[in-house]
Image (cartoon, rainbow, N blue to C red):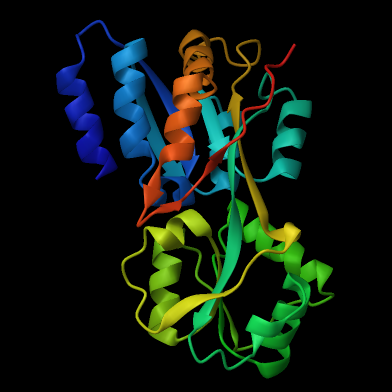
Length: 265
């Protein structure tokens, strides 16, 4: 669908339209928000944003190589290290949602009554209930590993199933297996194959999921479209951009909350 959207934008924009390449996470792409934002960005700025949909780790590697002009990702520790290393000029928070633990409605591991996320994961590990991991160095995968670490568990064994895939594919595997998984809320709300599955644990502050925008450093990569990257950042953090982000809902549920931080000085 994103490819179709880009084709439509290419035919709708004048030949002189500026383009920029932005690496985004599979969870952002799966949410459907890009289909709302990209046409508005094109209409108001004349910039065609071309998306490269990958996990956070791969997005940052594309940025480090100078293969994209900006990244929109969700792993703060990795992002701050990326800026510190000089690959991006700054990190700008744009929006957030949260992670949730999905599982079979029968909840064989009994995580629904857990006091916190670490306890929920401990119950899954102790029961050896199947757990599907993205296993792809994405922001979701990094968050999952941090939660296992907080629980004092090194997940391994036949019950723990890394897939090396994006969020949508990992959710399909989870449903097929009747397993548990950590998902961002936006992808889950936009996911069609939910039979027999439900959100079983949510609400722990440890499940907070912040997305940030990082424009590449033109001093490191002179060829990047830094002007376009900054214009897109300005639009995303504008009153209209933030309103569209917070106003994006599925079945009456908001997928993201806009929270643009002040511009870097």
